[in-house]
Image (tube, rainbow, N blue to C red; front, side, top):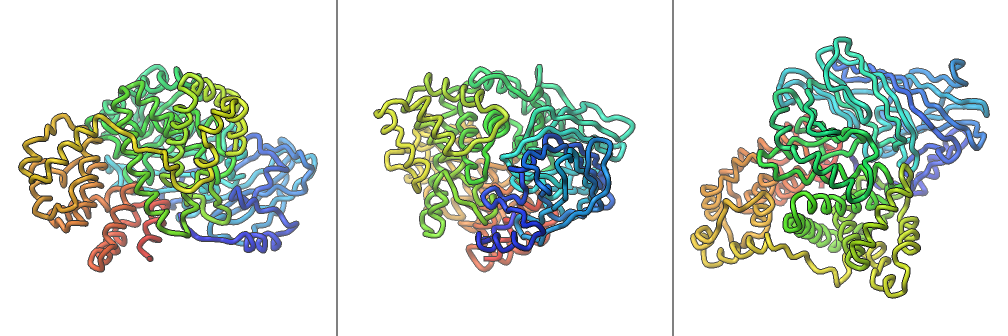
Length: 620
């Protein structure tokens, strides 16, 4: 995504250029008039054409014209609109339409005239190869290297780049779809899904629960399925399926633990699709079918906390959704907190506290960077102002980790029993609805912080609207990581003393991450070689460890790791790993030249979300 600032004044000028002056909902990053016209249901027909890297589709929207509006306004970006029809059921006639001027972030408004009696609008369209939501992969870019692959990534405002719709989280609708794909491939969506490939190449889907647009998802590839429990299973490329099923064997226990905490799982099945490595995020919480990066398949089940995170979104984000991207923390802060509770229930408190301590360390680094820049200090607040900005700007550790620690603070303030009862009611009362920070705080004050003492101790306004963290927000102490600190302390006596003191067989991935992030600053390339010879970090198959190790290699010019670093950047498209590595490279002229060369070769294998972020970084 691009990080381009657009003033509200500019947005208002754009609005005046449109026929009938449709409103631009700047705070919702949408042109749509969803407050006037409601879309109840979306019916899709999609023909996936791998040869052209295009989807030819028809989107039929069942609407309710509550305000007797004269037009319906949809969001589009990079779509070719072929023709439009409107009317009542089975009596649609072709009609005119208008496309507004192009906005680099929001795309173009699609304006369609309607009457009081209009109940359906149908748009025939096709995507272009450069659609920002869609990644078309050649066989060489997949695990099995036999067939092409396609996947979508709609969050935050990219659904409009493959479907014309009201692309705003405050608006929910049900959907069904028929998808045509090559017969050797299988289609999957964020809905009811097949478990075996059929001979026709036609797949039918239905999502009976209302969702916001960013949760519509599509994947097409040579995938297989394995069940993991009563309502859980995993999809992956056929040559990778057994490894994924082994790694994710705790998924059913996670679902059961989540239900015990905060109420029934509302989406029927919880399945997970392991995507090729170009997927830009760790995971995406598409209802019924989480998309996940293959970097969680570490071979030792050490990175499955990501599954707990995406599962938790089934309540926080999918069931109860932020109404605007300014309140993104309501999706992610709740989810990280809920993830911790799931991990505590499944793996124990010590393990969960180790994850929390690592999260606090990452948050502290983010806060240090943002607070040092006066122009960015406001982005350390939970409630953001992203008007005129790409909502991707809000997807930082602030929403995730500061949000988590605020909710931990509320739990500690009110007691776990009362806090859990409040949260369970929160998810139940607001199920399939959208909310805002102000609505959440109102509910919090009325139902939980009901005494002056609790209200004062909770200190809500400081957490939500204040910059940084409150002074009393002390770091998390982890018994597990204290063992690592004891090993690190020995490094001051020399590497030999430290290595003799360590018991690496007791280390998990998370112990190693803490170890690498806190190595004594005096380490040099020679010390790096000692560590590499002993622990083989350069050739690790664990992407989390690789990312941290390669950052150290760049910082200390440990050149034996450079070939593996380059291959990592060319193979893995997860933005979490790409950004810190490219950022480390560009600190020197030689490193920046190398980074530009790597990016030039790797760009076509990155999803637009990652490619745009890296490109912006390299331009500075």
